[in-house]
Length: 72
Image 1 (cartoon, rainbow, N blue to C red):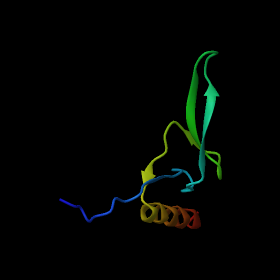
Image 2: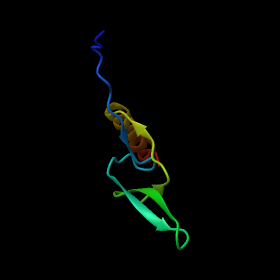
Image 3: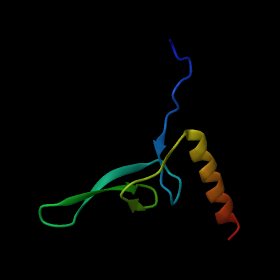
Image 4: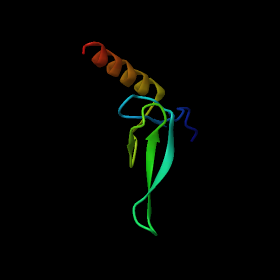
């Protein structure tokens, strides 16, 4: 049985600014132990994990963030 539905692509994005421009960084916690963090290249926000969403979802998220910042 062939499935004709294509899988949607999901992308990590910054929950602070909505950017999908990120990189993995490591922060030395102890001498022999390092923790990996995801860091937003655009705003500098970092966390252990970033949320994922489709391109349409991320675009909607950015619009909501822009509307919220315009109201301030």
